[in-house]
Image (tube, rainbow, N blue to C red; front, side):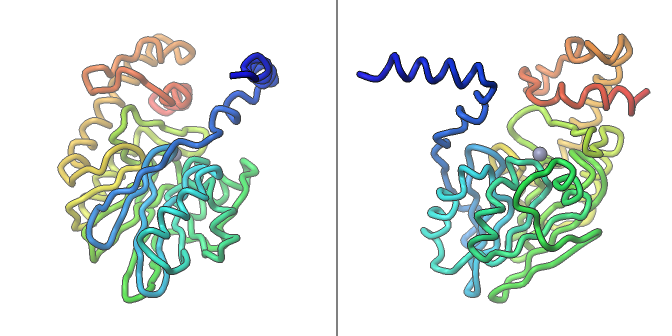
Length: 279
Ligand SMILES: [Zn+2]
């Protein structure tokens, strides 16, 4: 309390310097981990959902949140495995899914990502570039377990991978599916509101699974992903209607409250691009 005036001064100075966002991410939120199956865990809070599969020959991880979360991710993993992280698969390039890459590389992990997503990272000058890419599908193997990553088309970006754990009948969708509110169509990075629902439909046609780890939000079921196809189509129809009055203020005419999306979150950022695509 003694230093409160000084702290307040520091906050004002930081905010004025435009580094408020960076500051407010520090200290990081307390991460939580829950069991998805006896062989698969999910680490939640602060950034995208992280899947963790321990094997007898190292740990397979999907996504790694923000850089600030890496120490907590590592300590959570240590509670379920004494083996090092062997592979990290990034579902796409956004910083809330790849921020821990540098720490993972430093710990000796190999990171894989779709080639478009890596190119997006290079354009954005993001750190922690993966050293391995794939165009359609790739598999990693460790300790008798197999994990598959596959690109099925545009949606949230132009480089989203879905990651399948066949032994667990679980799918990590990255941000192609979120159970936490409105989706973000990153049109600046090749996202497509026209093709998104078709891409999710392909996921349903291609994989046998019971459980879905969304990019953000609570773990869901296959039926929730099925419903998401319709939700995306509804959003597209509403976005198109809102765009009719002009792209600049289209977001102010968009109402998705009945879909449980009273807060549109990042959605507005992709609005101009979506209006262009739906012209
Ligand atoms: Zn994302």
